[in-house]
Picture 1 (cartoon, rainbow, N blue to C red):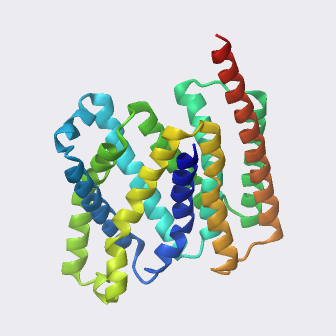
Picture 2 (picture 1 turned 135 degrees about the vertical axis):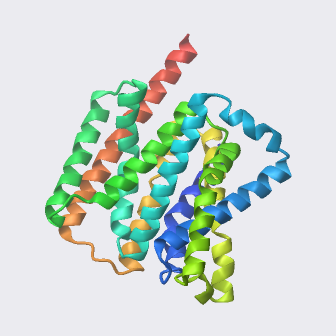
Picture 3 (picture 1 turned 90 degrees about the horizontal axis):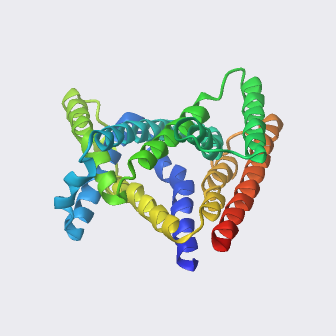
Length: 296
């Protein structure tokens, strides 16, 4: 369990600190950053697959129609999520990205009910309703729906749902996810290079190295998360995951100087309260299920 906690902390702290990383490339368009992220993520996982000697197993991941569709959908959902997150960070909307990842667990629960026919307790439904009130309050304050937060939450929840349905191997699944979109990324990078609109050549040597490392910064947290999920109860993983949006929120307020209004504080308070209720009820539910299985 101790190793699982360490893996979980590494994964979610890395995700929470990613706004600092993407801010280093503030002068680059989000699409160009995304294309490089996809390219170097594929290179990184390809090296890992080569070292692990697992290329022969790659085909087994997509052996049936359901798996093939799941891989394609995972690739689409995570690419859209990455693009919006990078754009939002570099356009000064880190607080809203934080809101999105606070909402994500609750959106995932709704999808589990709708698509996987999972049952919820009354307290879990109450948490979802309270979170919905928080989002509604923020929509009233903004004068529009906080679409960045909602799209980030929904796209990542759909990504998780697709992986859950297909039960993809972490490394081989990520290889397919990046391999599907890497041709598009390379075509785009070639086009903007020929067109003369590419900005990568303006980076310093140090920034160029950091851009090449975007693959590692993308893949490693996913592996750490998988290791944590293997060793820890789901309720504990669910609790640790709030480290990421909390870290991003603190960065937005104290490092990036984004305005955090009283109205936003009220909205976030509803979300935090909903998450506390949901985590508590889920923990009680998991504990009761364990006691029943032990008694049986």
